[in-house]
Length: 364
Image (cartoon, rainbow, N blue to C red; front, side):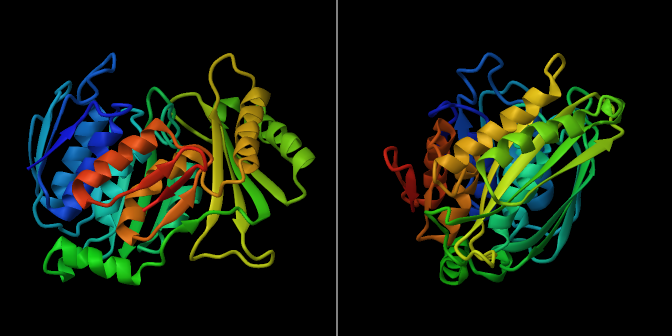
């Protein structure tokens, strides 16, 4: 059984989520101790328990210590099963954080599946759904055909957002005698990650959203206009930011922007997409214009870094880089989250990453 330090590096919940995902596909049981030990509310949180519960449905895993506040977890995966999942987080707990544990093994089941999740779509300290859908998922299509649909937004504190994710696998874990054979096949057949330059800026897109009770104040439009003004002053590329309203249980707003680059001015490379993301959330007392400005300046910072991978995508893409092999990326920033994920991935896959702080490159 692998033993993993849950307080390593930044010591957050990502260690548990990434470990659960990799354990499920490698079939290696693990024990994680000192989970989030340095945090004010240490131990497993509700969202981690939903990760365990969801994966238990996908691979009939056994688990010990899976309770709120537990500082340890033992997880024993079994054979992966292809089945549709319906999960209700019951709060504004982040849907995209749950997917950090669930998506990777779900991509390698034996037949197409649909995952429906109710929870928070736009929450603090987690990737907004629009970033997940438009920045991360394009990078994963080399492994499986994945379609994510936002059925309803869910803001803090009541959540009740709804997302549907359809996954049609291209590579099936159960077709191979063991994980090592499966992994060798992936390395031979997957287009490797090579994201070292931005190349040409083709377009900037975005979604500005708010709860319907903010429609009269034109919050979504004001966020979008504020972001667009800043970006128009700096870039000649087409800019398209749509404004959306939805009937939600809690009041909220936010904006997600993404810049699309390509090696060729006239054609976007779908095999090796280059997209930088940025976002900002509204909150009570924060002007809509400030929210839009914040997202735009975050995107500008990313573009001006000359890196084709933003700081959040860098740590999210690491497990997939390890599966594809012979990968190299240049990130706008190498964060503590990134280094912690490298530690966790190494425990399961033995892949060696070299992260160079000066050049902001990560090589596997």
